[in-house]
Amino acid sequence: MADAYAQAVSSLREQAERATDSLMKNGPRLLIMGGSGVGKSSVVNACFGRHVANVSHSIPCTSSISHFPPTERCPIHLYDTKGFETQSNNEDILRDLRQLLQERRDASASKSSLEERMAERLHAVWWVVDFRLEVVLFNTVAKLFEDDEVPIFVILNKCDRAKAEVEECLKATSDRCTGATAVIPVVAAAKHGPMLKLCEACDSEEILIMCNARKSFYVCQNSDCQQCDQQQKVKPAYGIEKLFEETTARLPVLVAKSFRQAELECFHDLQHNAHAIIVGFASVAAAAGATPAPFSDFFLLTGIQVAMV
Image (cartoon, rainbow, N blue to C red; front, top):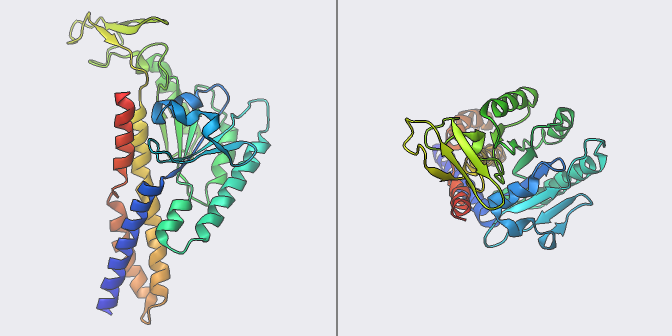
């Protein structure tokens, strides 16, 4: 009894590790959505490089969703939807989202091993918005992903605005989009200054900003700031590292969920008191699932590459 239990625990841990390694090797599957004009392509460019958003590299997945297969520089499966339209019911996109989810379920079910099944799943959704979130549409789409428990990250783009304005929008979005895993502010293509229009050295709002086609910088006017009266370059993008961190922190949970599902399948065949074993093992699996899997390296390295560009 004890030996069978120990062997099962060891086997399942190995499967979970292989599942995570497989995701790193094959690339997680990330769906990117957003309304027209919110800067969805800019977010993709800031995160993964300009070549990714090139239509010639995509494979039509449905009439409104394109699949960008992994590349050497960007080992992620990117699924990009066409922009939502405010004056439309967007039923074509909703239909294609249902189709994509079913295709991923079928592809996962056709695999025999845990790591292969995990690699075929849809792993996260990035929903890009600016300051015009369609709450009804968001809640409709969120329901589509409930059964698959796919985390949805709302990316509030164009946050090179005043701090008070951004914070108000962040709170409203969080309050109204209860199905969101996180709401993350970013500036995918800075045009009006740094994030929240704050000095990066001291977080002061007392800055003078110069942004035009020729130059983009700001000067802090806070006398207590070490960079006071010095030009500071406006970066091309802000918040990308936080976006990667938030996404990475959620992904290992997917491995843990399959880990627990595998435990049920494994112990079902043991000729012992299966129910008692499963109940006891659930706490072990939960503890193992709470330990971050080594998936974060991939996103962090990508984030570093973006910061170096």
